[in-house]
Image (cartoon, rainbow, N blue to C red):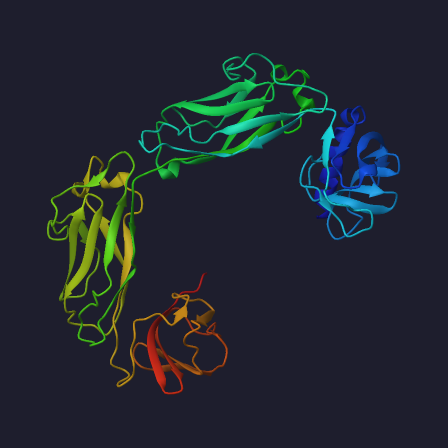
Length: 443
């Protein structure tokens, strides 16, 4: 923890000393039975509030061990610890230490004042894709109190409409509801339909704050974790996915594409969206799909298989096939979808690449089977366990040797190679393999 952070935490602790000095902390369930009991405020240790019970003390410290922490001490021996950097002793996540007297299980630490536990932080739009929120999951607010405090009112009361709670950053069109289930449980839900509910409209900082009249203690400042600001709603949106990125040239090196591995484009739908067309229709021929760039001589074939699936092949032979085409943009027109225009579909346009072989090395085993990763690479290449070469040569596309390496490891350093497209020749004994390599460093 930095000096600034320590100072900031100290100021927070000092600012609430008046409240702290009037409350006790109760250690419950510690494996060391003598540590269980009511800890009473007894001043400060090294500038931090301290509570004691017999020979035990409870306080925050940055003087013991390698990290600042909450501790339960037996005289001078730390027997339990907790690394939560918060202003009040935390209830959960206490750990045993390696010191004598530290016995499993670790305890819980309850205060005189109630503590709220927030369960589940994330909501999902339902599959109707209408902006309504699924009821499958909800945020639950659980009251934990050793002195019997509870939530006020009757079951099914809505704390928002009664002015007992306030929501913030709620998407337009939705209404937050905070409903009392019983004296120790509230449940949060959303009614209505969000006006904007694409993936990009997902929100991650919805907040809830309870007011004084929400609990029987009557003072929201005394309720720990009384507010929460990290609730999220993840909106759905029909999206396009694919099982490929590169199209590889056949090993005959004649400009034709290897179509032996099936490639497809899938529409993942919410609310009944489909591809628009007849089974067997070629979306490239009917101009429902466009490509930004193509080698002369080749033609895409995109056949509609069903409402959500298109198969993809590349026909013909590239006239010039001694260079690659990376980052080819593939887009869909409005006519490709039923019930939505292309703007409503997430994941388009997307990019693909064409990977052609070269004639710079003859009579070698040129393979499209990946032998290393990652590709594109930055600084290191890692070889698959079934083929670890002893000699590696990296060539530019025009056949110039860029780097020669001898290695017995499963990785090599290529940090000196600039961004671009290369051929990597890998030899192990009598076996030689050649693979395309893309180097793409992060600026």
